[in-house]
Length: 311
Ligand code: CP
Ligand code: NVA
Image (cartoon, rainbow, N blue to C red; front, side, top):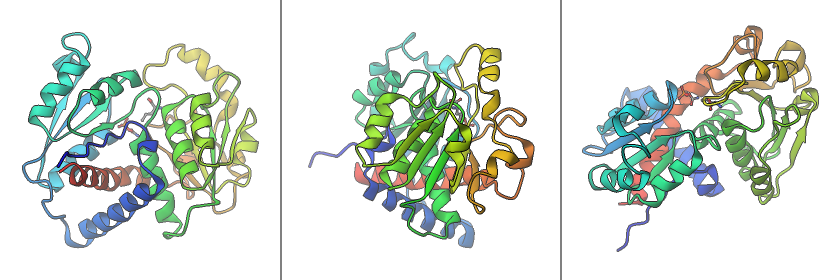
């Protein structure tokens, strides 16, 4: 029987049903790890290769520790090791890895690089962040909301995102929220709104998406307030961006427009005093470290589900 190879380049490579399946598995794995101190070695003898063009803390360690907890192995390749597209083509790298490893996670500047790797890979490829999307982050963010809301249905809840809309985290979160029936409002300065193709794709899920230049409108009545760095990896004109985004800081006054029990989320790394004040990110509404830890549990569920599917 032909194996079904599934790649996760966009969060929309999953269906809403599959997202819920992964969430339930992540919940189970997390509970098992917390209560028993370990999970079963489901992935003994399996290897994950991380091909990273950019820096990382959470994504790298959650994949590495996750594989180790399942009894598997991880190999981390930075750009000096592989020279993606320079020393060797994306296609040849993908073909070589397909012969030796079981799964690939790639973090690249251009989204097209991951598409090229996936097109030539016979093992599953996960987008570990590209300039367009960060699906692992969005899955974790939505899982964390579900956890905080005591596993209630997420549909009808509102995410208010403030800052750079033309951003990988915002894009995947907008799509993921739309898939789960949530409303998504994005408050960004002119020229930094959500990518129009992403909005179009999100609207195919009959979602309520609002793009505004007013950060107050974006967070007003929100259940979840989210922001990200004003300067993503690869962005230039740092000083110009700081000036452009200065009125888009998530501070206590802006949080006051959200629901009383709203939570604050940030993928990290965060820049206190820029996109968020210390008062908010280190305050009682912030769930950023629960969110960071959940990268481990959700990616473990994703890997397990993907590998089960392709074997
Ligand atoms: N949030 C996130 O992806 O963090 P890293 O860039 O450290 O992996
Ligand atoms: N938007 C940020 C996310 C970092 C996890 C970046 O791409 O640098």
